[in-house]
Length: 162
Ligand SMILES: CC(C)(COP(=O)(O)OP(=O)(O)OC[C@H]1O[C@@H](n2cnc3c(N)ncnc32)[C@H](O)[C@@H]1OP(=O)(O)O)[C@@H](O)C(=O)NCCC(=O)NCCS
Image (cartoon, rainbow, N blue to C red):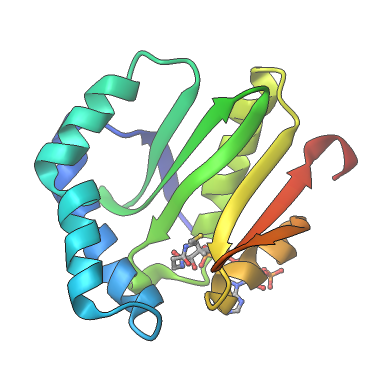
């Protein structure tokens, strides 16, 4: 498949911004208004916001922000954070053209190895309850329902048991 995974760098902000915008429309177009999506992308995924964030998390052992590349092009990204002994999958988004080819699984595997190397076994993620493909992905990768909070489903995975 030829996927290469490495840490996100400040010079990756433009492709990450493009993937976030495309993936958000793809994933949430039936869930949120276009305006809401635009605002979210502007606030959280503008090149400036991303640059600030990447430089902040770069030297922080509790964060993992990685990108997946195919033929030197960034095709997806994922971020995890360890807080109170638990790893939280904060975001995982692919270029929609590359969905369903195992890249998400590779990013997740990388994140799980990182957790284990930090001595952490519990992983949690929040998914919008209408994001059914997202939910299927997590369930296929061993996550189980924990609770529902407003519009979100919280899923968890214990690496010791998988
Ligand atoms: C969710 C996402 C990261 C998964 O990555 P991916 O590379 O597409 O997934 P993989 O190819 O590794 O697939 C793994 C499993 O997920 C399931 N899956 C993935 N995409 C699916 C889809 N569109 N519909 C149904 N199931 C899907 C499959 O069951 C597959 O399991 P299998 O290999 O045992 O059959 C990716 O599809 C994506 O970016 N989606 C849009 C953004 C999103 O929803 N992010 C999560 C927000 S919380």
